[in-house]
Image (cartoon, rainbow, N blue to C red; front, side, top):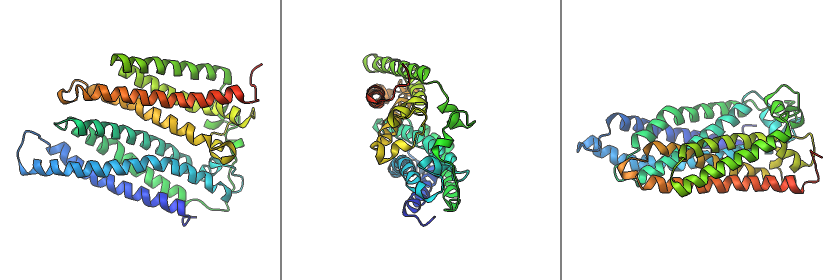
Length: 333
């Protein structure tokens, strides 16, 4: 199964991205150790010239890393027909012990990649490289190791896929009382989860508008955004999917990716991802607001990120609300 075109594309892209990040991390470590903007040494001049190349390489690499998350989900969904018992990506990911770890690692690395791109964008607009050590420290210590781990785990996942494997269907994995994480999420009561979802949405909207209008409360909005991201993902399993499928017991968050349901899952996950990255980006920039070269750049960037996050979460909420209102399924009298 390793010869499958989509699998080969994912493996090759992961290797290339990992190679680019290793190259960037090598020079990033030198920058962290030796960077001194007030020095006119030959080493400093080399580092200044090199940082443009590294930033460009990382920009492209991390954009592809973000896109790889959605391509991985698409590939897992496409592969389900190869396994007995699988009905969607849920079964494909459960075909061996590396599927879901790869999936969650990709979510983590893509969110962090998005935050790095935000920091890099702001740093590039400062005249004195104000965040250069911050962004390369983030790369070397956190992002690069996680991407390397993800690449290895993803390889083990695809290497361990065999067509003769009998896997579980999503109905089994996300059934109430199953004793799995999916079963626990499916077992969350729908009514309280609906209240929690809309309450978190209201909190994010209020705090986001406060950032846009008052240029204050960035940490609060970032925390509210992270909370809404988590609650929204949980709500998909708990009750939103039920209205999409018009079935009171089908909690799978992957079947909504299929054409039978208009591939609405990609819109759900895309809007959720953009909102999460933008919200986290607002908080990530907060410690640097008082830097002289960024005193005007960061507030303006945070306002744009707040608007982007709010629009993304509102899109998610509007689509979810559409299904809640117009679906013939009624969970409550």
